[in-house]
Image (tube, rainbow, N blue to C red; front, side, top):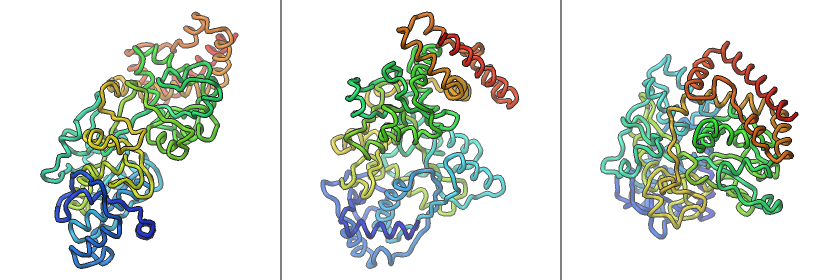
Length: 482
């Protein structure tokens, strides 16, 4: 990774593209800064000249410090933050940082299992930082004693710029065991050209994906395989007044599925490939696809129908390079670090190679830099942009909803499509629509959901419940189709 980083840094210098966030603070400032980027910022050669003038050595000749991270973040995120922080730290301290991204061969679930196994046998994982994933994971690791409190840069404005909660969601731990580094929302990615060809209005709300004119044209992911898909389905359900109506809204969308993909990333690729007209998507999948095809694809966040959740960063228990880890966290949460998420390539203080297209977690970015951000960046703190999520209910029915969707739509896809097709042809008679949307016994109210969730925790009972649901929906769709 280090050789690849140095090589790319050299390419950036030759190309003259490097605009550095460090330009926003005084060269003699010894802390991870929080200043405002100037109208212009020096390129890489200018920053290296400042380093040489201040410390009497070139960047490559400076003594090195090491930082070890483990992260499910993509390589482009790793590259941009590594580049910016390395130069920032060299200018402030006269030392360069060598990054080691520990690869354990998988995503967030694999990383968590790895850390649990290590801490079961040792007091340290020899890793400084964990970065990326859902807040539930970080809450669990805190309970297990695997995280150290964050000591943010003295005098910084980080805590005043990052609220404790948004829409019922914790954005940072009360004890600062972790803090969100960005926020993620859920929305709709659609192909504008295919919509116009069919003379359809662009979807603006979740229920628009249940429009019968989109029958067979929506790309969805299997929630038993994709955590972000499961989260988006929960948003759809909670956007309705109650659970039965929320299920009916979700089922109409599931019935419009062209297919169910194993990953949310594959589902989000479908509109751009012409395989589907629209897809549900976590925001950063959607924005990345838009960046690849800006004239064709559009990503929208349904106003007032989605929650924004944190993408946290934390210091692991007994890190080998504690002080450097704390400084890196302060940089990620500073204004310069946050601007890397949302500025276009080449903007002063922005990325040099890849636009990251993520939502900053700091509130001030959306006001001070509104005109500079990528056009699809949504202010999650603006009035009516976020909905209040009932996380107690979400946690109670999390596993229920995943398995219910699997039984109703993935395992019974042909029957679901046949029943939906008959309803469309018949003009949606009210009695048949009500029958089509009826939930199985045991999950029709909150008490039933709670009891069923308990049954699903037992593998034998879970197999029995899912088998009953598969038969229930198979028979239901057959009756509706007849």
